[in-house]
Length: 513
Image (cartoon, rainbow, N blue to C red):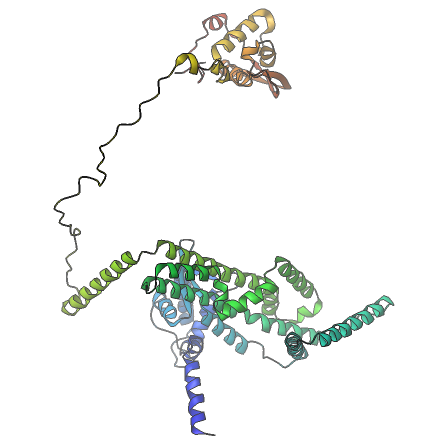
């Protein structure tokens, strides 16, 4: 073994252990961190509110300390409160703190998801070399060879062989053949292989989302530097914003996977297949956590796809907003202001002491403006507005009676109802409103007048009947409308009220001025 080869391998191992995922598993308090993160973040709960996360971490610490953990050297628990621990985990790269729907939440980073998957595989069932796993490998190699081989004749020969095999199997089943049964042990191995493949997906989806967010930060930083002409920056970054999924290796890989799992029909088929598997008896031999994990495979895929698409939409929105609102002069002024503030802190902090009183800034400095501009560049004198055109009443007054299209004519309706009741149409029980409306003249038999008549009847006091009344209303343009309403009887109005026609209590909104 050469010295240089050992040195290169050792440097590679050092770089690998600098990864936050391996760093998490290598920490002294790794069992506690893995336990808390695995319990807080589930496929049904990918994000946890900051306040809830702090409460759950504090509760977990309290329960473990009450159970006797943390006192011995081989079972350590971290010191400090839950807020400090979560802040340390964010700084280490295991958690991501972001705002979702105006609420600050924690999410697992790609490194945190990977660490939990590694710990789950090591602490769970042992990975075995099974027929299902070897078949998956062979099928992947076969598909790779088929995709890489450009020989048309070889592809046609393989397809024809597969067609012949399928046809022979179909003919055998048509002749009454039976389907070969598979042992429960083989089905269990296949199910474990499915779970093994599905456990890799959450970390992959998280890496794609974080790669998109990292590219978003790079794009915004390049825009703020303003090192190139504005037109060139606009063209390049608007194009990158539209094709954000094609600018990173993870994004291109995810775009390829989306062609397989992005179709809703594919997800529905996956749900149906999983339900078919869970109905078989061999799943009773699986532990309950594995059955639940198998049932949630499709949900985890949907959740991962939504997370990546949400990151893509957010990145496109941020980049587009930055390009649209980019102001190099303003950004430069903000940077200079921040540098002045930091310089002032560097000068003030060494001379300050803990608990020293800091004089607050009561007001902002006011600029010394000697003379404001009072005139504009336009030398033309102000012109008065154009005079209004004289209105010729003879020519411009419309001939049509616009009042005919207005609201109910309460006075005439009230007088008509009183006259109708006085003519013997009413009795002690009341006056039929539908009959009164049918007997009215056309000018007060509009649809809106029916509403006015019902309003007057309500003011007088009315009683509902079990019948449905149908009346014909006439609009001002002589078109007719047939209206149906529940039959009502209005109280028989007094002759004085009918003659007066101006009761204050029955005044409708159409008569108020």
